[in-house]
Image (cartoon, rainbow, N blue to C red; front, side):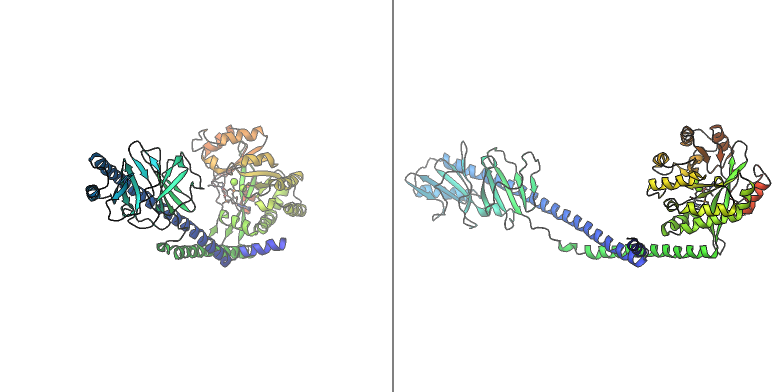
Length: 537
Ligand code: C2E
Ligand code: MG
Ligand code: MG
């Protein structure tokens, strides 16, 4: 298990591996994203097309029915009855006058005559599909796929007029598999006027209250057209082609690939930079480029120095300083922080061991990283150093931040063990994390360090606004000591003191000092430095 974790960790530190994974994942994600967009667009186009076709059909049907009814009225109103040459001429005249009348027929018990020279194939025998007060409707008069065969027939009295399929299909190009249906009997029965038979009623749910004219299902597009009559509905059905990537979407693959490779390359650069920092950190520890400074902590009332916080500096061979805020998170990630913490503790005892022995009230507080708190190791290291340098556990405090604490219960046990032997435990940067209060309840602590951000908010004239006063009150209620960090102005110090804060650190009193400067500050018993000493002095 441990071996597997170590192997995985070693892979995660390889820039090429990380870059390949990042490139593959981002290419896949980009491809999936653009496919989704293309699918949406295709569906939208399908819907728009269907909507447009439906509209055109409806218009044509209105024209068509209008003309058929008018022609029937003409026939009904003329005096001729019975089949003779004159009737045939009249029928032919009507079919000539009305563009959409393909055939006009007279029918009575003695016979049938038509405007067309031969029997057109109209099935005149069966009962109408719809019977209105004036007109009757035959919806599909023939199933033969002849363009000229009638698709719709209207009747009044002894007359019938029919239109041809061509008059319906010339407005829209019905794709194969599509049909125009008239739905009757409250949606129960459908008669195809154009196109192939469709199963009806649809197995897809038919939401009666759905206001959308177009219903898109997995396999079909169903377009319902509003009609004036409650007796029938017109429905246009088209088969969906299934998902196909349109030809103009060829750019998706190369674009995703190029972007994915770009992301992979960026990850590679970042990982390599990180790796080189990692290597540099190793070298820095070996070459002794780290130094520990001490920022004094003062009693705000007496202005006496009561201790200091150990702060790490990385001075590179060229003299430049790298901020701990840059390299500490990095060292936490790579696990080198353990070595760094050990180094700080070792250096602190080497430099200040004697001072601490001579000043039993003085303490130094050391910043711990999350992983230092997750294992009991630190307790063993400090115990050895305390014994060797004959310093009391009371004189070493530990600062923990909530950042990166994975298992609070484990942290609690380890911190409690440190407290049990006499160390103080402080919560650093209190209030900046999102679960400070939750941790306060769980972690055994002696003191809160109010983060500089809240002290800054007090401003130059230390107006009592902001969060700091509330943190102070809460700490007092919980009987915790309070240290204010980053005090830069006298007004802030006086305000904090008046609020009952006992301790503070900040540039108002002193920057971080070298060990020699700090020893001088303590041994000379200077209450407050006349001039602030600089940390890089
Ligand atoms: P921190 O523990 O909250 O340390 C306080 C930071 O505030 C220090 O920055 C200190 O120099 C700065 N500071 C103190 N007073 C003032 C002030 O009046 N004004 C301003 N502007 N800043 C002030 P530094 O030394 O850069 O440390 C930054 C952070 O790096 C520390 O925050 C701590 O989290 C981490 N760190 C530093 N040394 C160590 C270490 O030895 N081990 C670990 N694990 N972390 C460390
Ligand atoms: Mg700190
Ligand atoms: Mg802090």
